[in-house]
Length: 496
Image (cartoon, rainbow, N blue to C red; front, side, top):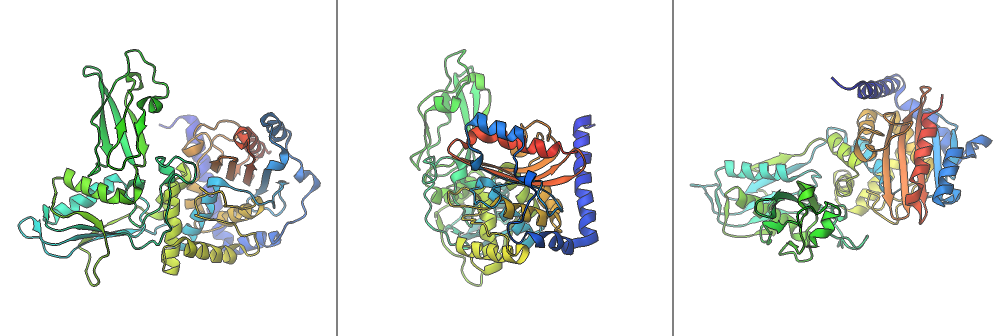
């Protein structure tokens, strides 16, 4: 049985979604247009709506962040007059809050049940366990072709009767047309998985998970790798630190070297006090990751390959032998917003271009999203979406425009799926540790970059009102201003 507090939260969430669904069914898109039309431009607001709550002012002062660095808007989900509007028309970098724009557009344009297919082709019939030809794997943008599904794909290939490939495994990644990508360019940390570039055949987010398991008797930590990577030297163990050593910053203590695409190396030690740990990293040469992962998994399953894994295209007229189908978009969007996955967002963004304009490029994706924005939101200030994920110094949106979009989403047929994708304060996702007045009563997407913190979503107030809330802080000391955004959320939640 669920604890009373969680049960109450669950009941609140279902009531929240259920009442919104009834609202939508009763009035539909006409209601959305009715309350959004008066927002065509900056509207006059009550004088007290521009006054920041004292708790927010105090938090900004403690953080030494000027009030001019904050953009905020709080309005009822069906309201026309904001309860609070502070610099609501000032463009701001929203960091990962931009994912709300991409994911809502995708749910609206593609539908919650949309899936990605990854077909596999054989250009010859297997005979006696051997395939005298090539295997082709065609990527079409699946954001969640993770290690478990890659294992199933290779198992399915074995099940067709192939044990030895007397040819090549060809990876067709032509569905996306992408610019060159330097994973170190954004922040100088290319091994961070959040810096991975999108790919038509994105395998396991281009990351390898390294598991550390202490073996006290042997004096080492034993290492495991998922997925296994071919053509890469992977150490099987790392020495344990001196007995009694604290766990501390165990990653730094390993003195890892990820610079060489042909090997992963550790020059340091691992503290036994850490117990079992996982470290997810993006290996060097991300362009070659898919080939190493496919070959590594094929060989781990006992398959043999006389040729190599290479890029290429599926020959015209060849029919798929089988394929892999992704989870639905609703589940993908949930992973994106709950855990703020950058590369998954970019996969979805590029899929908009591929599915709606015939080209999986950033230019086409931006064009599709701009057209959708004009159709759904009219004169609301168009966001600068850049790559769609918010991992950008150029992305911009103002609080009023984003609030309008969130109101529109509230009245849309995909509201339940969109709403369920947002982290719940004090419960899960990137807000699981966030306590306070709004714990269990706020569904909010978070965002953070150097010089940026942001929050946006929905707050269920104590008096029963439901608010759209948007808050951005753009300032060199933005990270110290998180309590100001927390105070804003608590202020909205405390309304009776």
